[in-house]
Structures are given as structure tokens and as C-alpha cells.
Length: 88
Image (cartoon, rainbow, N blue to C red; front, side):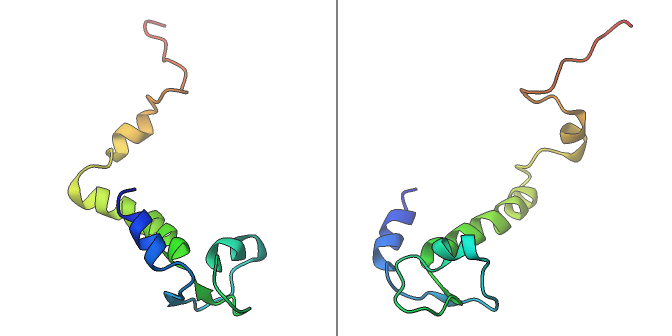
């Protein structure tokens, strides 16, 4: 959060990327946020940040060994999973 606010202020209203596609209608509000014009292939900083965060975070966690292993995620010992019964 510390880095996103200064960058969002710096790049507010500036086109930071051109998308190779036109986003679907309910995504256009985020992808074209505070940008002048009607070219919806122009991309705002916040949309690029969201895309990068969503696509790169899991891979970096896997590379650094911070992601849970496949065996642990298959086991399903999360907060909302029911406890397993022992002895039956």
C-alpha cells in the first residue's frame, strides 16, 4: 500500500499501456479510470497494477517457497472446512 498511492497520484490521468483487447463493459470503468477520450484499449495505472498483482503474485510465492504445498491445499484444513472424524 505504501507504493501504490504515490504511483497512483503520479500516473493519474495518464495512459500507461495500450491493451491488445477491448475490455468487457463492466471492466472498462476500472481499465479506463480517469483517462480522457473514448479509446477503451488505453489502460490506467490502477488496472495495470491489479492485473500484475493478480497474475504475478502466485508465481512469485511459488518461486520463493511461500505458497502452501499442493498436499496441504488438498488436505483442506482451512477455517471453513469441517473437521474430520477420527476413530470411525
